Each structure stands twice: as C-alpha cells, then as structure tokens.
Length: 49
Image 1 (cartoon, rainbow, N blue to C red):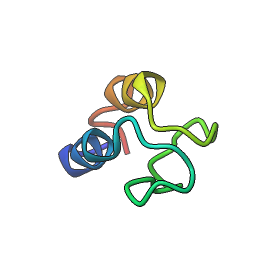
Image 2 (tube, rainbow, N blue to C red):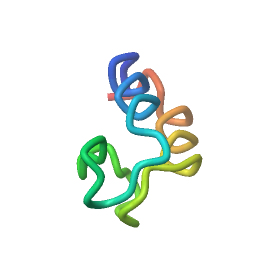
Image 3 (cartoon, rainbow, N blue to C red):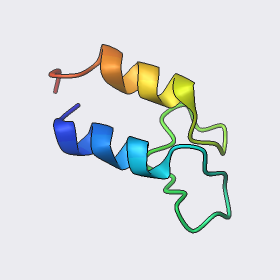
C-alpha cells in the first residue's frame, strides 16, 4: 500500500457499488462497500508491496 492508495480509499469512503465514487479496486474485501474495514486492511499493509 502507498499513500495514494490510502487517499483513494479516503475519497471513496462511504460509497457503495453503483455510487459514482465507488471503485471496485478500492473495495479491498469485495463486499460492495468502501468502509472502515477496507481502510484498516490498507493501513495494516501500508508500506508493503
């Protein structure tokens, strides 16, 4: 994860599938929603690639 990944999640935060802000690639757990769990996964993996 990089800083721009974290920013992308923050900008899409609260969006659901079908929302213009929703991006499937940012939906890390694939549940159709960009929520806290996606951010936590990203934060846990920050700096790893």
